[in-house]
Length: 168
Image: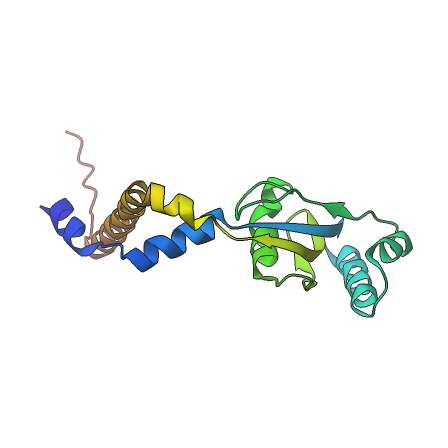
């Protein structure tokens, strides 16, 4: 019964499906520098960022900071273009940028990064038309699972469980 109720409440609109497809398939290309995580690395990253935002070229600022500029291939949000522990903050920073924009220093688990968005490639919405029903079913299943998980958490929070350990 609960599964039927959840299916009735967890709906995915056409707008949600299109937006989700667009977000999942959009790609960005960035150049970036990485410094050690923590205090000194963060300070070096701030100094590098200040230099490039003042007009120093990335190559020249990197030489001055004794680091190298790296460039990604086009990637989608969540793709592993840096160490696994850093994927989320790196990706979120990259996808927030506008073309040509330099990120603030991104503090991650293994490094401090400064990113420069080189190119944003929008999702192929013609592909969405072909994959529409599959995409919507997938989002619908995800949404139903989220509602079910929330309901189970609420249920667990309300139910007091006592363990009676009577051997005998």
